[in-house]
Image 1 (cartoon, helix red, strand yellow):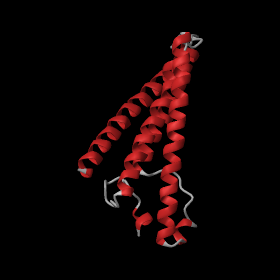
Image 2 (image 1 turned 90 degrees about the vertical axis):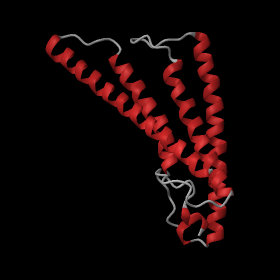
Image 3 (image 1 turned 120 degrees about the horizontal axis):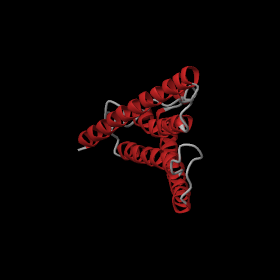
Image 4 (image 1 turned 60 degrees about the vertical axis):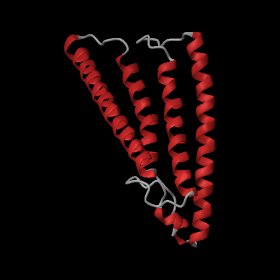
Length: 175
């Protein structure tokens, strides 16, 4: 069962990577159009900089969920690797618990903020994009990270070590 769940996570991550790559290409094209407009035509389309920034915000927060799934985020675990297996396991459990708590807290607080932006109907200055859209990246990204870490915590609790190619549980935490 865990293999099928991990396959779904992997497919979702791959779809996210594709969407983010397309967003990046759009941002590059907007930047190119902006340069051409500015230096050749003497005209810069309004709002292109805002749109590029909003794309980068989505890339950062939603991309962080993919990084979390792949367990490829930066770690300061040189000292941890020297600990006995039992202590490594305890530290890993603590790490997962703290991650879930913080990601859930940020998700909820960001959701409330996005809802306020939505009710206010605020839009960006130049592109006139509703500001709740770029702010939603924080909600989506941290919610996805919380789900990923909950999956990892479940695998950890069940003692699964090879739950996916992404490594739902770091093998060194259980050795």
